[in-house]
Amino acid sequence: MQQQQPPITLQSLLTQSRPAIPQQLPPQAAPIAPPVPAVQAPSQVPPDMHQLIALSSQPGAAPPVDATSHAVGIDEDLKRELIAHSAIGQDTRFRTEDVTNTKKHQFEDYALKRELLMGIYEKGFERPSPIQEEAIPLALTGESILARAKNGTGKTAAFLIPALERIDPAKPFIQALVLVPTRELALQTSQIAKELSKHLHIEVMATTGGTGLRDDILRFRQTVHMLIATPGRVLDLASKSVCDLSQCALLIMDEADKLLAPEFQEPNEALISFLPPNRQILLFSATFPITVKSFKDLYMSRAREINLMDELTLKGVTQYYAFVEERQKVHCLNSLFRKLQVNQSMIFCNTVNRVVLLAKKITELGYSCFYIHAKMLQQHRNRVFHDFRNNACRNLVCSDLFTRGIDIPSVNVVINFDLPHNSETYLHRIGRSGRFGHLGLAINLITYEDRHNLYRIEKDLGTEIKPIPADIPLELYASQVPPQ
Ligand code: AMP
Image (tube, rainbow, N blue to C red; front, top):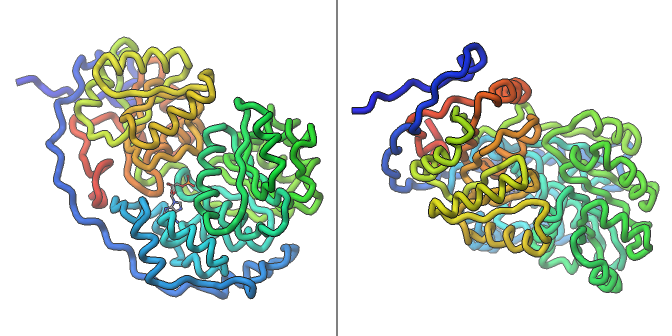
């Protein structure tokens, strides 16, 4: 029988010269366990309304939303039915404290329009996540907010719900502008906005680079209430007076750290000059580097801060590294595919070239695989995004184009075929698995040259990346019950 080798630890990599690498990954994992019944949701406790009311009377806040005009609440049976028919309502996977550790608020507590509540329940959102509990009531008061929460814990709805609530469909102009760093994220976010506002008569439009201006110009002849865009395109449209932002009193920046990177400073300033002076600004991100602080000091000095990041990484994502030679990486990936129970995987490479080459190799190995990177034609990018999201393919090889915000709930494995150069990129990449508190794996293929980088990422993020074991227990990434 073959002797099993002990895992190579990062410590030994850092202190010793290049060790011998096992030619084979550890043997095949145990057979897949049968599905187990879902964990019951915690019992409901009445929310602390006093706190919500106190929040809406902060000094300097815009007048609270007029709750009297809303038919607050929704019939409990209808609510149950809407949730039960949604994709999320039927998802019985285990969820971690990252999303279950709430104050037990209900969406009804926020005096939202009945039509908006219907959209929320039809999406399958039964109760607010921690970031939604903090951000929704505060944003409804009109305050500017700087909000930090982990990847995939419901940030999008945390800003879309108050934005949709505050939009008056009777006023035929842009009332909310949502900026996102990538085209795919703009499409994803506008889709969610359209679903949430399904019963509200609010017109949501997405506009991004990579598409013809002509269609956008025609579209602006009709009413747009909420515009979701990448910064370059909206600046172009505003500068050409195609879109009027002069009455847009709400600016939202998702993945704000990325949007506020130094190279975007000038376009951001230009864009803000098109907005009215009394605008509300909401910044959302998992990571807030120093550039965000200077923006805050300049444009939102009275902003309230929400920080739910007691730690950086998601509780549900287990991280491993496999120490390999560069030329063994494809072989290693093949072994992982054979051993793991992959729902859907995202495999990251550091260059466009490597994305294309790896996708070709994976296809040759007989696995279904798509690839996506920033140099592809936009219509091809859209197609791949759409099809992967609809489960047309199990594996997606991608560049860092897909690092941020992209939400594909069935991805349970992320593989860093190449280790990223910085810790923030690492954090956002691995956050593509473990969406909304679910379980997932992040596996890093590490060469000898990567060892210091891996060590730095661990230290920067205060996390542990363990050597890959012989068997990865299924309950860590493909189970409906909590890991022991
Ligand atoms: P986000 O962090 O906005 O990308 O959201 C991550 C995932 O959580 C998405 O698949 C959302 O549909 C889902 N989600 C957001 N809010 C809720 C909620 N309150 N209840 C259940 N799922 C949610």
